[in-house]
Image 1 (cartoon, helix red, strand yellow):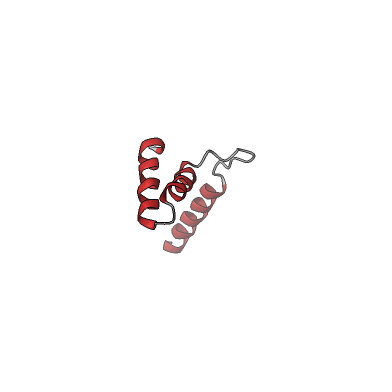
Image 2 (cartoon, rainbow, N blue to C red):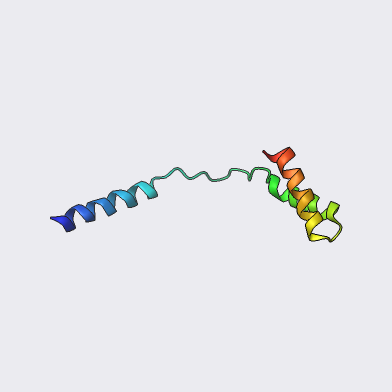
Length: 64
């Protein structure tokens, strides 16, 4: 009896995952993190600490 119930749980769990709404053909939203990363690299000038600082500054001001 336990195996039957456990098997039914797996069937319903799998069915739920298979029936999840999947969107196709939707454009990728603008990834603000990538923009912040590029900004940090431009403003940091090769210094990792400065790059992180400017990336963090951009992300907290424009992405949140």
